[in-house]
Length: 462
Image 1 (cartoon, one colour):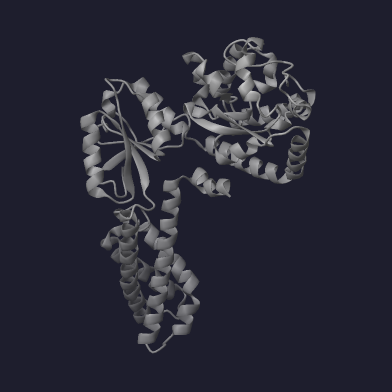
Image 2 (cartoon, helix red, strand yellow):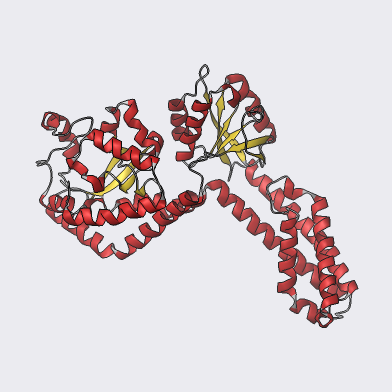
């Protein structure tokens, strides 16, 4: 249940989810306002043509919502609060209804009925919208539904943004601040603050003081975490983007997007991940239950092995696998370091004595990794990407090796279909970087198909 509760936020993002709900609620309120307007007009006009007007209600409400959307009454606040837009939408709807009545006289719409309906709909819509905005403000004042914001920049720049946010109140709340030391972006501090505060937006103040390469690295970092980056005014001369009148933040902000990662193929990649992980978990659920039973009967300990691994942008997450070793395997690893057969920071033993009898079969066919479909569904992993490594391996990696963390980790990847554990760590890094630089959706599909063959041949699986 905890996983299912996280899915909407993962797929849509908290801000997008809140925005969608507000649009739906406002559209329903507008529909109710038009219904009240039509009923009031029928009542005041003694029912003249009332039945025919109400029979056209679905068509009339569709036109009403479209007109309201055209006048930006479903945009972010404060744009949607413009009373002039509501007046204009009412007049435009009345004009379209009268035009329809002129083209189709059998509709029964009369001049008096349409004008009175538009006037009443305007009054009801204004009243309902006022109640909606009042209710939203009350919710935000109680600290509910607010989006935590992390402000980064020099102290004087951060203070300016924080003061403005404090005066504005509303949907955004200051969750923390990060100092940019000197002229450089302290990405380590930024990542730690994001993990600590759970911020869903990063506001960068004083971006014009950052070198272009460091600004791009910062942008890439937050993008890998699914966190939008917005730049406070002052950087408008440096960057190109779209000005956002932020709801409740009290200032115009520029939303900046990383050009290589924000495209339709990335959205399709995520859609493929969700579709395959959901379908996979449903289809192979009997197999998962059988494996869980076998692991339980084979050796004492939990069915699932939960290990902290380092994913995109050095963010740690709990990677799920079927337990293929003794329950105390991690505690014994330090004693077995001298038996390590792998070069570089990784730890591998071809005939690891900690592996159980069932675990050896699971590893041979890569069945121990099937629970990672849950990680894919949660957005922590993808079907295809660089393999996530344990924290122990990450701490021993050199900085140049950490470039492979510039993509979401995957269940399979270019390394897995090219030899897997038979390859050196340097080869793994080289293949991961090649995948990242030459990524495409077709490349992912090719790797998935070749993975099936590699599993069948049991290449490098131990």
